[in-house]
Amino acid sequence: MTTEKTSCEPKKMHTQCIMCGDGNPMSLRLIFEQGASGEVCASFQGNSLLQGYDGILHGGVISALLDSAMTNCLFYRNIEAVTGELFVRFVAPVPYGTRVTLRAWLVNETPPLYQLKAELAHGGTIMACAEAKFMQRVGNKETTVYV
Image 1 (tube, one colour):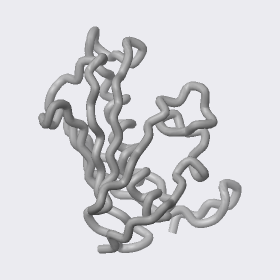
Image 2 (cartoon, helix red, strand yellow):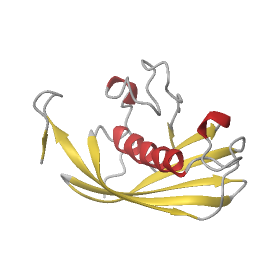
Image 3 (tube, one colour):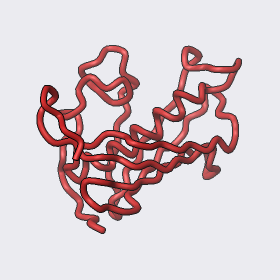
Image 4 (spheres, one colour):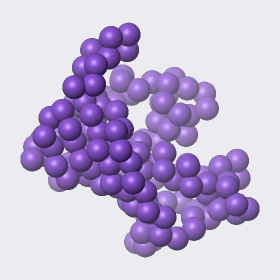
């Protein structure tokens, strides 16, 4: 498994992303940082517009946060890939105003397939976790081929 730390600039590949894009006025503007062992982390605090049930962060938002963390983990390895499979386990309700930490790491790589895990935690308690498989993108947006 490659754990080489790189200086990839994820925003160049994802400027309109609803989760982390700086070119999208509706973006949640997540900022991921890479740790020494290759994992990425970000902090996030939802607002009342992101609720599902009253007072609780919507499960789709939680899923998107975890997916974004794993995508950015690949970006820091200069890998541009799309989610092929995503499994999310919701462990505890996340109150919408709670500041949480996102963390993602690479589990296995067999290019063009990458397996990752992610977690959303508050105060050291895991509130949700995910496993995903990503397929590498080849080509520009008009001629993308998933290899």
